[in-house]
Image (cartoon, rainbow, N blue to C red):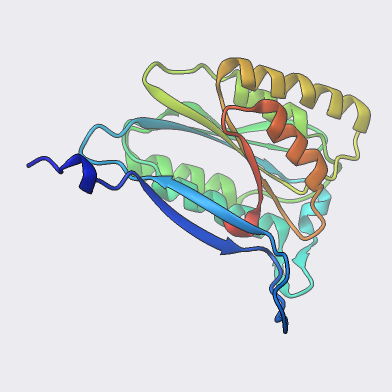
Length: 222
């Protein structure tokens, strides 16, 4: 039975308050996040290619905030486990991490035996240890270099505080090149800043340059 066009829902719209909420005696200007979520009717959902990139540098061992006992890497790891939980048979996944060097923790591949593949990703996430300096571009390059599979929608999910300290200028120059490569390949970057002190300006500019619906949010919103 088909749904009449005028009765179909195409978007779910929700409004969220920002990171800080203050009680005021009179109207004030506030920032809000408007989320537009497409509503898909019927079968035929596209398979996805989830390419997860996580910062494991020393700064990720710091507390995520004054009111949060968890470390940045613990919060990012929890978010990665959430993404892993959403994978299904036929999807693709990859996991790379970085400090001053990049590492391919789980190679790019198709999800076949769902339980086994999810367990492998989960163990790789739990094995992450934070140490060393930050060099973002190496792991991001690993994620973007994986082949695009026809009919599968690729997304790169980057979790970092953005505190690049290792050869900073060279790393930032390379990030510009990678953002251009992502734009040319049509691969959006979902960037999640971790911790209250994440480098918002750097990560936001990276998302803007990558285009294709790329965005930068605080990891708490994932």
